[in-house]
Every structure is written in C-alpha cells, then in structure tokens.
Image 1: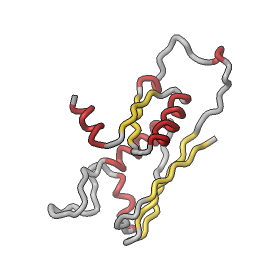
Image 2 (image 1 turned 90 degrees about the vertical axis):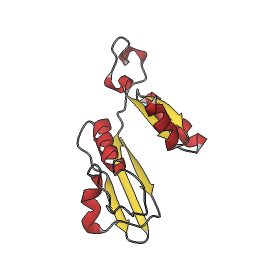
Image 3 (image 1 turned 135 degrees about the vertical axis):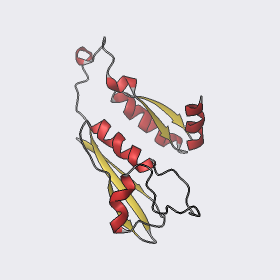
Image 4 (image 1 turned 90 degrees about the horizontal axis):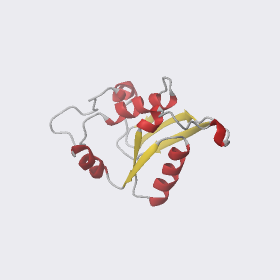
Length: 141
C-alpha cells in the first residue's frame, strides 16, 4: 500500500529546464542579490532526502510546473500492512523510527492530529507546531 502526498502552490512556476536543479542543496531559481523570494534553497533538497529515507529506497519528488501559474509536487511512500497482534510488535529494541522525530508544521489542527496519529501508528514520534518560526526556535535551543 502506498500513500500519495501532493502539494500545490500558486507561485511563479519553474521553467522546465530548471526543474532538475531545484532539488540540489542551496539551489535557487533566482540567484541574484535582489531576488524577490527568500529562502536558503534547502527545502526541496531536504524533502527529497526525507522521502528517500522514509521509503528506505531512492524515491523522487515529482514536480509539474507552469510558468505564471504555479507548481505541483508529489511523491508516494510505502505503508506496510502489519498485524495488530501485540505478539509481533517489538518491545525491547529501539528502532530507527523511534529515534526519528517528525515535525508537523500546519495551522490546521485537524491536519496535525491526523498526521501525528498516522506517524505514531507507523512507529514515529512527532512534534506539532503552527509556524516554521517555532521550528527555528526549537533548533536554536
């Protein structure tokens, strides 16, 4: 079973010939000092790595974009079907998933709740925040 994630924006769009480069760390479409859009160019590179890590194999984030209209990013992750029998659940070993904490950033309380429950079901811990600034503040501590 796989879950597909789709994120769509109504931004400036990405030229077809630049799509491959947007997944490179510190890459930005507008490299000038007077660019209109902020950011470090790490978001998509980190997202790509996270998708591969979570799927335990190389996976691609697919980008479809139209200049002046926006972009759609999508990827899918496998979700194993497991027995709910307590006898098959590990009790004495800490798994890699238990060492990983997923930070859910959303202003929608229901989205945070659903994602948190699904992540917990899959063995991950999670933190819920409403703003990216909260993540920055946590990282600074």
